[in-house]
Length: 213
Length: 213
Image (cartoon, helix red, strand yellow):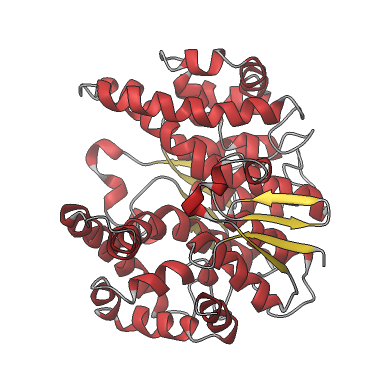
């Protein structure tokens, strides 16, 4: 098997890559990396990702890291498989590029910090920092106000098709929906409907099922 | 004239877009936005960018924001003009996608904070926060250690051609080179040589010249 994902079923960035592979219907080998023993900070993993963060990815002699780079590589390499996930018309691509940047530059910072404080820290037995949660909920609300406006105009964040710009949100949305930050999503009807729609995708359900395997 | 850039010659994100237009040899109209009077937080600018951040960009009926989305739009739309800036072979694209993500996820956070503390805050008459500078210099050093290793293997961050992955670093490098954070760059010979090489590009020199026009 050519494709290998080195990661954890609970790591948001690993889940992002797995979602893409399942949307594309591609086979892959999963190589579990134990963060508890610091395996991601040692060789051989750091030869794959010098920043020591999950996941790492191999496709034959292509060895890369950074989840959003991996999803783009998969999508542009396996164009004729599964869900297209990108556009090829320049005007549609323009909106896709914006959607992907907005996710990583605006949505992910507060969403990632909230997921850390409200799900991962409690899981690790650490105390949630309430001040951080309050501050980041305000930030997330501001960002989702922009999403609400955009999602009133198109079904997905970058037009009328499900693309990488939507897919990249899935792991953080999944974690936030199990916390009180769900209220920030639910307060915005178009965001709430879009979030429910993308979380229900069969490819994503398969990724979640792996957490319980 | 079809292309319009709404921004400021001193805004790093605006400079990133201008660098791309000059590499491509494209004509454009520059529409100055006065941040001093808060023009970027009001209509009509926020109709172009709902997050109220420079720059905004128009190319006919394409109206987008986020500097790294704009540079990708320009590059994939005007493929046959000027410097290619991207690859089309999947293996080369893989390395390009990683390089672009590393810039925005690893390099830019400390570099952007240092540029803010060491150049923009003093310019605005605000006090530099020394604790932030020290912390971010440590972060930047760690990231540039990875760059040093990679740049020993290829002339540019994503292979042997100058691409968007290099170009996106230019505005922050330009600002940092005028500060004490230059020492973090200079301490790494491959990083220093690469930085000097890309800052000397004629397209970039034209962007800098506009600050003195």
